[in-house]
Length: 409
Image: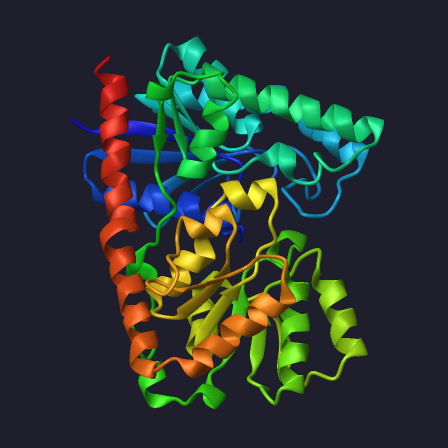
């Protein structure tokens, strides 16, 4: 029996983000099971490439774009006018989703963060008498709203928290992307523990470029290693600490190249830092297209993720760290909860203290002291961890079992 699943996404490819990458890998891996038929519908904030219905890597994507302008998720602040337009578009999105669901006749509604999709999925499922599953990947209410002490900021935080909690407790099953996020949601006492399931972030190994050298540490000395970061240039990523660390390393005669790939809210601050400090070995490379991401990994030997310690970073696991491990790169990460779920110190990577320039410096100096064969063993162990526990083929089987439990109830 094939199970037809209607996925409700906030956005999807060709939009570039960690969320859209996970969305792509979910639907493509589900097709590979030959027991699941995924169909994707995206919110009104993503314009279609050329038509309302698109086929992307074998999966049908239905666009519901009805508003002009860029209303998508952003690290930058949105105006009250744009926020109001988003809220008003919810009813239109719900109406379109119900209409589409009646035509495609899914067996299950699977909506994904944020509440905009969660609420749409819940009401669609109830109207059509279908089971619904909601997937939480991040604490959206923590993205700037929790620290905003203004009256409007507090109201926004409470509203988003209320809508997220409603989406969570109304679902027939809840999926979260890691254990820390599961513990956070269960602490709210709004959903039965038996309904909450973890489907970890993972890597699509079929998309890992095969032509990149796998034994860099055996052929390079420390002075020839290139360090790097790939991802969104956001405040939570701690990249200013990384630049400060490389400034301090330069005083000690360590001038390895550091390449930073990506754009975001923090880019201007990084540019200003480099303008004020002479660091010719540090380069801001800008954004890189997903299809060309392997070219960045080809140039980098060691990936550094210096995330700062905040509630959201302690709950959410990033994709790029897993991707780096799949590419057989040595990973250095801060000791925030989301990263500690992925990396074990001196076994699958090297861990340093968050929010600390000196800890980053010490971690890099540690690499210099270690034998290349020890470092290569860490890289090999990390790659095996990805293959055995963090692949999308494995996750697809988990989703299949969850769907069957809903369909057979």
